Image 1 (cartoon, helix red, strand yellow):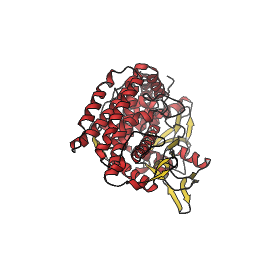
Image 2: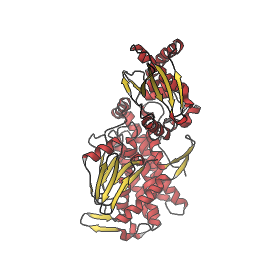
Image 3: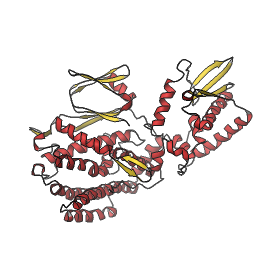
Image 4: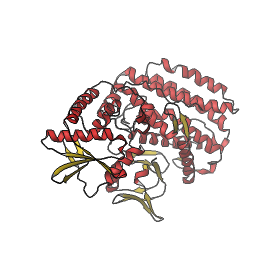
Length: 330
Length: 165
């Protein structure tokens, strides 16, 4: 199984013949090309064209994050899996209003059911979430009847609004109050964690899309914008509640990340490097957790579930099997 | 659709029609699949000394050499388990060469097993290949992929998760 590599320190990424290494005053660290799926760059890193040529050849994606831990962009090497057939199908389902709305609804349906699942879990553990669950269930029932993407986005916004209200009840930690959802920059610690986690999710799904025949620029819920990726944002909706939000709850409740893991600065709060690493460790563990997959008949990791989700979407586009989103059941 | 039959389609043909269709539409199997990785490594590292890849038409021949004045082409495979499909692939190459006026002999090479199997294009084999080309052409021109049918081969197939998801 190929793994991502995270680089937090400053230094230079270099190629020597057919190997890669990271060089700084602390020494030289080799990067196993055959076992690396992507490189996540958080530190200040110098790279050159020779390096980019080699990562392209090795089909390794680079994701860049700025000083604050926000996603900046991706070096997405020339597509290595090209299926004209699949791209035309993807576009066909985008251009047809009904076909597009169907897929967009499925993404929101998956997001909604997974959010509800997370809440039900905490309700079973004695948290008073009855009102919130009722509220998002009412909203959830209306998903099927909407007739436009904008309406769908509005419902999604309302569901998420209600869902985030539950965070304070679940966490019960005054150091991590939700307040309102704030981005760029997030205004409080909890929002910093949500933004950081969501960025990780977007890049992971982008990396998985790279290994399929889908074009990440054609999304269904998020309008296609050929200047940026959108399909990964669509698919993230399904997985954010069950992967990122659960990681957030666990790092806070286990005291892995505490109030003093954040630094204030002119442009907002920054998660300290040590805390970023701790968050990623918990996140990687979550991704490696396996569940028994009924139709495949074996254990499948959360990370792999994402790939399967993309396969299901491909089969929907091929007119083989109607797409149904992954919904957690345990 | 301007798809031509090639060696890998011929190889798939004896295994699974769905695989033929998917491959022909460039929906290639999961490249992280361990067997596909192993195949790639064996192909890159075996028979280094005599290795000469040959490209012509839409055919890539793994290995070409002269064997006692005979022109010999080889196809490298991980295991002889799927010998029938490997044989069809090689016969297809021999047939393509014959059409270009080159008579050659074939050899299946299984470096892991230190085993070699001779293959020659008999009249029977030739008509089998012609029939197969015809049927493959039919499959790939179908509007939709042939439906998934579970077979023993699925267990180690790079399309396994695609088909089952």
